[in-house]
Image (cartoon, rainbow, N blue to C red; front, side, top):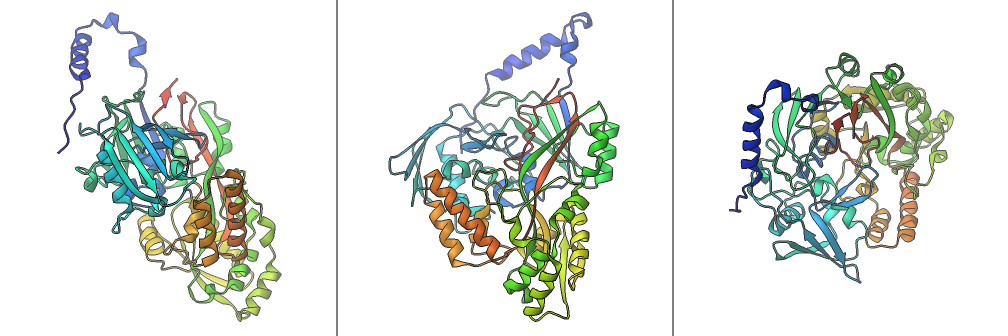
Length: 502
């Protein structure tokens, strides 16, 4: 049992509250009445609230940086910053990282945070029975040692140039052994907000952590309102029922908000590679000629224009265009229906092909799916569309790989390594690609890493693993007086830690 740490501020705050309670109305200034709550709209409801036990981006969009923190964190520019580790050193051979932890940090239940919690969190993520969706992030770690309560030493199997970045993911946040099992429904972290309540199907409420170790949140309360329907999201913003949408689901309404002086509209970038995902071992889809035919049958720009109202950047592989290592491979599979037909005929499907297309709730998937289905029909590929809710998509498609085609945006940062996993829902197994990723993970030199990343992008394109559509734009709409929301999304987050009303 860890020691409970009492806050010396508690009695001071109580006394201050009593003192203010005795003040006369004439002494209360307008500043005391400044708005300190925010209602933020979100499209998808998370399946649960434990970022170390689920792949859904919606989990991190609620809890990352707000409730849970890691040794490091990723800021709004994508840079790695200190978090629960205030500093670190790296050995000359790159195999030993020594972290100095912040002192005086407590979990929301009042228990102290120390090196034992770090070891528990990382060992749990790496365990054979781990349910961490990004377990591969920790593959390079050989051992976690705790020489004292304020120091953690991570020994590596081989140099890992991305370790500090990996430790900033939501999947690498610190949890306590006493509460980890309950984090799905009652998350207990060290962040500037504590969990208030979750009204399923409607909202998640966060409350300011008055005992936070760092700069306290300026919002006393934040409500994450779940609104999956684009029309309902637009109506809620216009009515003032929602103060902000960091990722607005109705790009068709952006011009309306831009013309309304009550709102600020920000078009940013994301890490969201939006793809027509292919089950690579499913019948005819195991033939690269069929996969290449699908790629040539899809007009990316038409999908961007029709589903996203022009917002989005065409991509030809699984990599973000804003990254300096990006290789533009969009020309490799230019829109060419006749070539698509020829490839299908060569593969033995001249008379046609029928595939399932499962579409999750986001508008890019539902709208894009209808457009893509029509384009595939033009080359003789019939698609049977089924619309599935997010929980069903995670269960059927992501976990069960029971699908032919689906559309989803992969918003994890620098996630090209997912194609090297032994089990992943694309069912892509390629020894050469795994070799590239193994070499990348052991390479620290930036120029060499960029070269390996370029080779990896070209390999995925050549194998036409998926139909790579576009990089998802970030449509931000919020009240003009709201300050501090991220304009871009280098990681899956709705970071409210520095948000306030002007």
